Amino acid sequence: MSTQELINTCMLRFHEPTQSLGNIQTRPIVSVPTGVNASLYSSLKFHRSVTMQSQSANYFTLPSLPWMINIFGWLYCGLYSTVFIPHLVPYHLFGPAGTGIRLVYTYCPFFGKVLFVAAHLVHLGEAVYAWQLCRKKGINGRAQVKWFASTAVFGGPSLYELVVFKQKSGEHLD
Image (cartoon, rainbow, N blue to C red; front, side, top):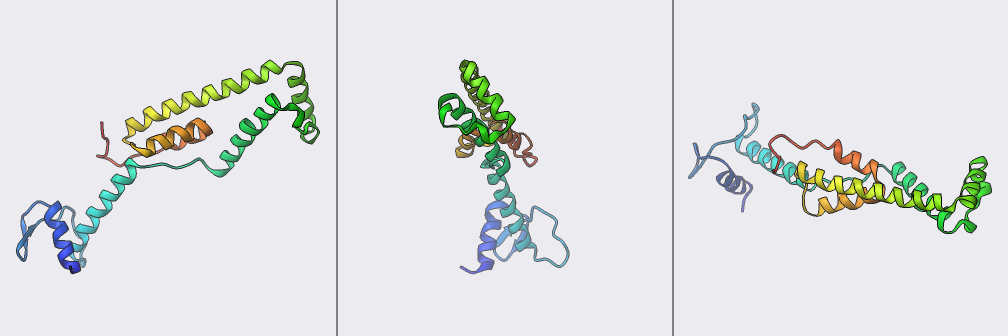
């Protein structure tokens, strides 16, 4: 199949008939810039809009690497290890903060466990909100599950990426 036949086939499927191109009746959706082949331009414009709509419905991105390292380090390595395996933590490497952390977890170990559970509950709440926000913004399928998991693990920075996402006009799926 030649390029022109492919373009004509696409135009036959996606445009209202008003203009004749050989034996196919078509009408371009967009205004064509001067000096550009109308049939080629309109088929490319349609393809780009369909691609953007599908990208919007499947939109997912992780938070930036510094945020991921920071959250992983503090919550999962730092807090977990000082609460559940405090004898393996090199407190002396943290300077005065290490001394303070060691004293808190030595004399108030319950505080660390409460803080650990509270942090996970906050992340879970953010993940549920991310799930609802995905539905509101028209993000569905695997992308919605990815947003839930990412927000459950990384919390606020992942949720921020979802909140600032702006869908294209006319793509709301409610």
